[in-house]
View 1 (tube, one colour):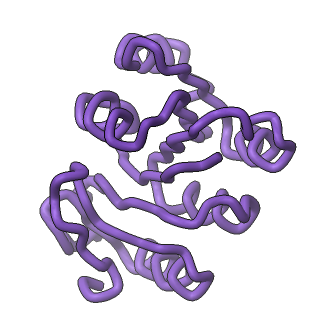
View 2 (view 1 turned 90 degrees about the horizontal axis):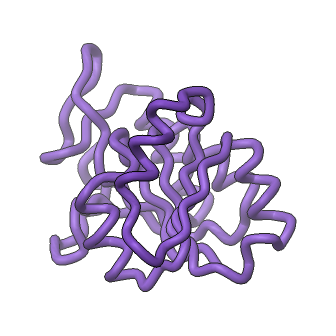
Length: 156
């Protein structure tokens, strides 16, 4: 069961590994990222960041879609992490069990505007947010569970 999908360019770090995982009661973290699976050094660093007692799986977005739709992940309480909005929309379009997406960190880059403390978007990201919203996905901006959730539709 997918508990939450989070978009965060940092993927697995302190807030995610400990605060979110504990709050959600997740027993497995799935990192769905095409770049990570090609970078053994980054995968090693991410493995060192995982909390004890929680399974960590790293797959490409397509392999993650296959795993999520095949039923093989149904036995887990999954916390899904993606690094960008493109990965989020690909998962949401292909995995009906993704019902909520948390926007936790999109870094400020050239051509992007900041809409909250940790979220910077360009026009392409805004279009994806609008599409996810039209699909009925529950969207929120929240860095940690104790923060008040913000509606990205109001901020874009």
